[in-house]
Length: 56
Image 1: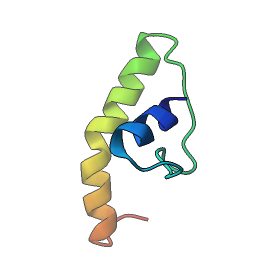
Image 2: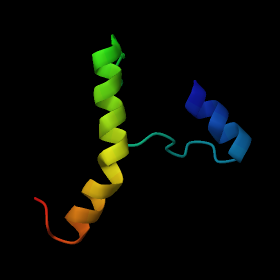
Image 3: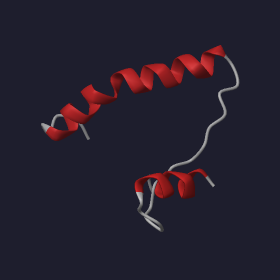
């Protein structure tokens, strides 16, 4: 439903809105939230390392 609304606002009916392979994850506790925060904070560095060929 939200994808249809986004496409309606953008004037792009039928266009994919969400990333392929995306999955939902319910944050169940503080530990889970902290793990997700660390992943997000470290993501630019992991991307850079992979781009530079220093990480597999």
